[in-house]
Image 1: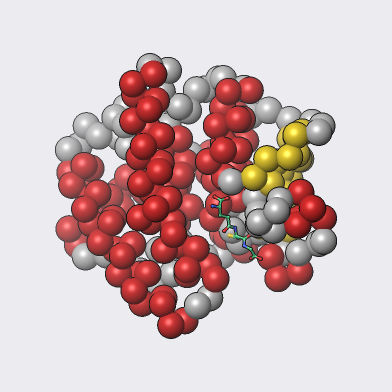
Image 2: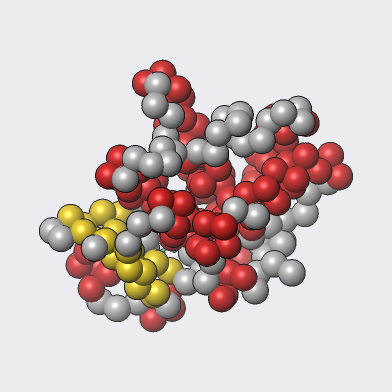
Length: 201
Ligand SMILES: N[C@@H](CCC(=O)N[C@@H](CS)C(=O)NCC(=O)O)C(=O)O
């Protein structure tokens, strides 16, 4: 059975929990307090970060790498596009998320007060550039009708907007409606720890 070592408030860990619940297979989640990390985390991941997925002698880290592995190992429902061109585009979008958006999330998660306001502004700008995609009523998910890994990757951030004190203007309404669509998925609800549930009223 797979074990996911998961930070109880970690958005990157929540991505992996979300995928595990979408797949509906057997797994174990080891809840780790980020402020009291056991020494074994540094042994399993040289970057000493969560999440980590362990399956027999495989130790994987980096949430997107873990999620692609789970997706290939348990292909139903498939979360990366089947078509190679679409899959390559999805990977490129995931890369942009990491460089432009989640690098800022890491700053907020690190508690570095000095750079927090700049990080919030960068996240706000990125999301506002993305918002018009959802102005089209037919756009249910990031790639259209199908829920995909891109939705998984961004959902934990959208859940944490209030928690991170990021306020979006009214024109972000279609994006927030899309966010509600993600939050109502059973796998998303199941993926949350009690601390994450408490992040949003
Ligand atoms: N790029 C990594 C980011 C992982 C990350 O930053 N995890 C944080 C928790 S959210 C962590 O373990 N930080 C080390 C610490 O808090 O000691 C991923 O996608 O998995």
